[in-house]
Length: 224
Image (cartoon, rainbow, N blue to C red; front, side):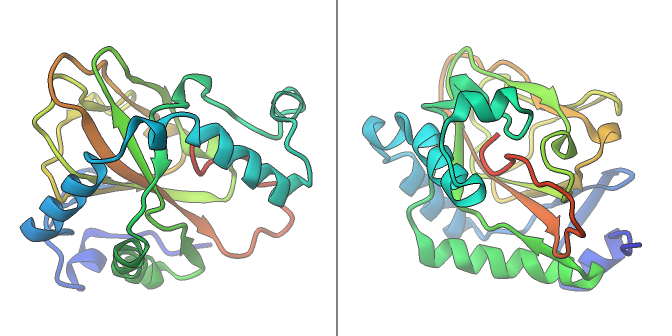
């Protein structure tokens, strides 16, 4: 049985933390102002070519590594893979590998307190432009190894597009530089409201998984 992450655990590392609901944490100083500006300037400069189709290309590559095949539709039909088909231009690789590793190490120390957990890394940028949302879901639905989800927020000048938790009666607009952490289980079913006209909404999501799967089958969760 894993230790349950607490507000006191996170604060012991020098982070400023709000526990908005039990086990829903907002680390408000995860990034400095200079780091926020750097990441925003990077991700907002990506070309449409970089965004377009990167999701499915990365998925095929991962499927080859995980299953030895890249027939995505068949993997979905067999229940081994979950795909959000309209994400082809909403997820792309974060290009600053050096700073991604800095962020990963900074966040990993939080989960080292719990023990037995590994953070995937801040490898993906998610964007939502006008009229797009993220359907409600919980992360263990597609990957039983996920213990926690973490979302790093880069801007808050977009219209609507609130993060919501279905069962907690909670809608949030995290400030830039905030790292949200919450469990991947069904009580923490979440999504994002439809984004309105104006600036694009950016964040970097990641997942924290058990190190020792003990035979559990991991599904697709890195980009879904």
